[in-house]
Amino acid sequence: QVQLVESGGGLVQAGGSLSLSCAASGNGFRIGAMGWYRQAPGKQRELVAAITSGGSTNYADSVKGRFTCSRDNAKNMVYLQMNGLKFEDTAVYSCYADVIAPWPVRTYWGQGTQVTVSS
Image 1 (cartoon, one colour):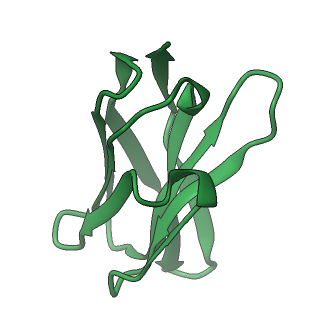
Image 2: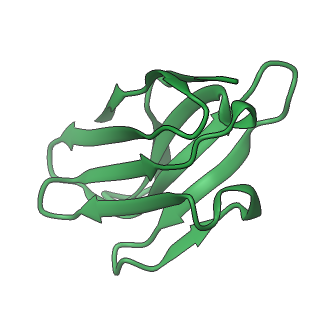
């Protein structure tokens, strides 16, 4: 069993910055991709950023150039640095990790953290 615990988030004015962190813990596991999703009220969940174990990243078009996703493989952590925040970035942000060992491959989720951007 793998657990993901997020930290960060909160309230910030438009144009400001916030950082999110997510730590994976458990025994004898190996993680492939990690990243972040978000869901705003009344909207579908969307992928914000993903990062492979090798460090390759993928971002939603809406956050490119503003958000940076990184990870520390030794610590099993993933981060999301959010700059130039906009009102429309307001959502619950959840981290995820694709655990590739032991079999079977399974995706684990954090509990979610609220990010609120005031206009």
